[in-house]
Image 1 (tube, rainbow, N blue to C red):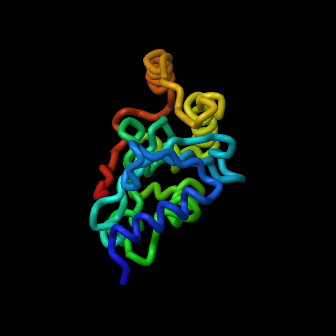
Image 2: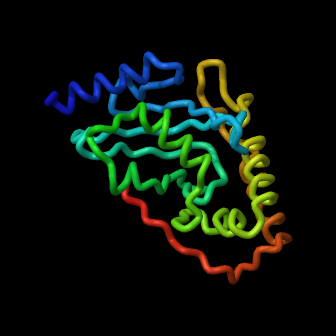
Length: 193
């Protein structure tokens, strides 16, 4: 079996040679950003998210750490931190997987089929279960506000969110007007990344 260092180089090169836009942090193959496009035929279609990836020294025996840098509305993704609740990355990671699987399979499946029973975003989970049309509308508004391709520079960097405070205030105002009561029970998700 190959060494973790060689495996990191092989897997990162595979990602770099793919259609994904990958930006290494200080030429370090263990920390980088990937521009991830929302899957077709989902409410996330048309959006681009900057995903931060860190590979531990024990990779592939230990799972990578991934997080969304721009906001996304999804039951299994923490809106503020960008942490992802996904068993295959957390508890059931295997050396048979690689980072390419995360972007080709795991994240597209997560966005296509949310698991509302194991939420990191209780409000999104509740809305997904109670009113799917309103949930889809809110996802699309987040895509437009936070993941629009125009929010990226020519070299793939995310433009900072100068209007974030105003957008967050608008979100809070709309949440207070929504039909979701604050007494809805929220189940905390487990993050083991």
